[in-house]
Image (tube, rainbow, N blue to C red; front, side, top):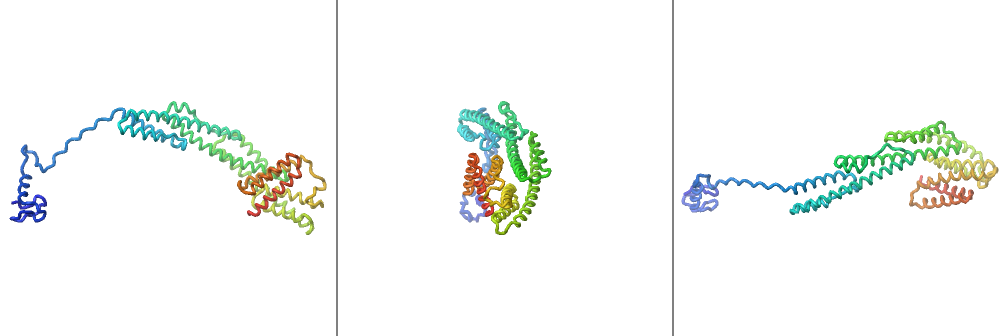
Length: 404
């Protein structure tokens, strides 16, 4: 009888018919041990030992069509990635690639190749159209900047030869196009900023000349800036330098004008104090002086110049002994002089109206008054136009004073 169980390898008690642990019959245990120890007839290893695994059969190589399909698919994916930086305009053939992959997996390799060839043609056509259109847009923007007075050192290689060569030529073209779009965008933003600075400088210069205020050597610096602006072509660094020159010139204007205006306001303050306390028009003159000082404190030099001009007229009327609403004793100015003054006044007020919120009630009312004043000027009704513009100026000043 076997002394150990062939199943759980635990000792078997003498005379026991079953293993006390797993219950395996002892009679079968003896036969199991014999079978485990008996050699194979051909002298090979015991049957208990696992037979060596059969060698795996080598898979046949894929057909050439399948390799071609895989190569084309990888190439198309790479070309899609090349055009990805074009953003929403980038051509996309993802659906065709998925359809070709399904056809190849189903064994329809010829059909998959046909889908890939069609997708390749569509990708090339769309990419060529997009790059050509974007390159033409860059050129249009460059010409538009030149028409405003700035020439840019910017050029793009021809589109068609690059696509005919393909490969790296197309990749270089796309990279150059994206760089040109970024550069033209920066140029446009910088140039717009420079033009805004120049417009402020010219507006303040015109006000200073109209008010008879000396600006020292600032006009010479303005002329030098104008000369630089017409001397392109420019690189990015050139526009940066121009912007700095413009900012310095504007800063000089903002230093020269307020000083002159404040000194004149002091003189007008003494003139107002010398008027009779209960005299007609003194309150109006005092109000105009305060309004001018408030504009100066907020840096609104154009508005300060306008109200100072009104203050001058009011004081001249009072000192001449004429009621403010009546014309000056010397008679009204010639129509051509008055027209020029009113046109400047209208332009100044139009600039203030443009800075108002577009959808506000004040903006709509102010725009209507500007249009009314313009029609009055066209019809030669200068006095009516002057009253309309004066009322608009007071309305804007009240609004700005309330906002402050």
